[in-house]
Length: 97
Image (cartoon, rainbow, N blue to C red):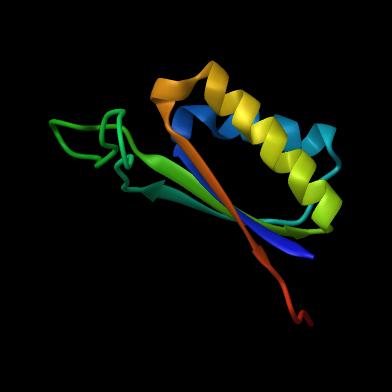
């Protein structure tokens, strides 16, 4: 099992949800209106007068193979919308209740 965490520009969140629906990934916890700034490029998303854009984030636990497919789909979305900002990470899940 893997936990996939992603953060993206709020404008991309619907596209992320469409990917999840297409892949039958139903369980997640999400957060709205988060601040963030990319590591190398892109504009900050700080929710202020100078940088009004905000991020959304979510975490979802899934099987390893599904996580790899999900990350590949997210990479494609990011490649197509690079300046919008999307980052995703996967961690092993050792226990779950």
